[in-house]
Image (cartoon, rainbow, N blue to C red; front, side):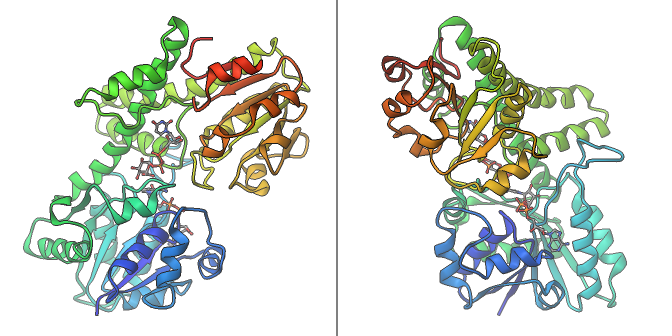
Length: 455
Ligand code: NAD
Ligand code: UGA
């Protein structure tokens, strides 16, 4: 029986390992983490984060062929294949600060694997890492091995799931990418990983490449996706200035089969833990290779995203007679996208901080994000005027304006007539996700600003 150990029980490691367990009943899957609290949440009724369908998958397998444990070393020792899904954040100090990936967690996982292993292992990079990380990891493993003759094969198997649709993405991936050494041992390891995915993924969707192509493809993938959003967001500013409507432009673009319809929703800016960090990582790699022009090209994607967030704050303040000081503003949505409780790098953080900087009073509602989480993200020291409330009506009662910052479906079906009645007048709506019917809202009496729509 093959034994798998997944190191890192986060947004990637947890769902990915759970789906492998679901689809491969004959494989034992142990998910380990240094965070005791994360592991105990995985073993409880309330999982560490909200992800549609995750609870059902975990409930089906936990206690059968899926277990969560903080005994990292035991499960690494026993495993044949080790998936490493630890965090790879941006370095915050030292050389490359603000750009390069901090591989501290990865390196410590590799050193621990070398320390405890007593048999050959396949080590799978699931985390997003700089191109050529496998080379460094290989050296750490082989030069720190405690037992002689142990062979390690490193594979790059980047993860492409999106939060909010993680389970669907894992059950039905458009592709699985496996990079490995092209020698007989490497090809054998690639085949072993292919055999696992073959339990549920059609062969033609499993792509194999060399290690460096797989590592770089992941960074390129996120850079292309983020670039599309910055492109449509840049167009949204032009739409507002010219009378074009961004959703009509997106529709027209999306019908071009060379462009395709996905990822063309203008927004208050993209968020999430990965786009910014992975692009900055790419920029750093470009610069380290003397490719300044290429790095500058990708940096613009981030600059446009920053511009989009600050443009939104500017719009709110200037529309409301150049002052929001002491005014209540209802904030609907704090997660970085719908169907997740994740707030990492959410555009809502920068927008809220911008409005607080102008002394606004915020009343925030998000269906899945806790008060504690919101306070943590806003780094509150008690002087800010922020309330976290339990529904959209409360958030907007007596408010001068409301901002939609996450595209939760429930915000589309709110009774806006009722909201209008309970707000101060003139009542402003700032739709940062372009999900509301501008004409209907204007009929009710709101003054409406919606990203990419003429005023
Ligand atoms: P996360 O922070 O949610 O989870 C990482 C986990 O690894 C944490 O629980 C941490 O305690 C644990 N960890 C760190 N060092 C460890 C060690 N030495 N031993 C055991 N556990 C350790 O991060 P995430 O969002 O799951 O992302 C993980 C990686 O996957 C990142 O490289 C990210 O870029 C990539 N990725 C993320 C997504 C996503 O949607 N979140 C999608 C694709 C790829
Ligand atoms: C993204 C990628 O889509 C995944 O392929 C990748 O695996 C993952 O990053 C990762 O490496 O972490 P995720 O960040 O979970 O997934 O979510 P997305 O759906 O990509 O949304 C990211 C941000 O862009 C959100 O803030 C979202 O609201 C915004 N977005 C997305 C737009 O503003 N417009 C769009 O058209 C699409």
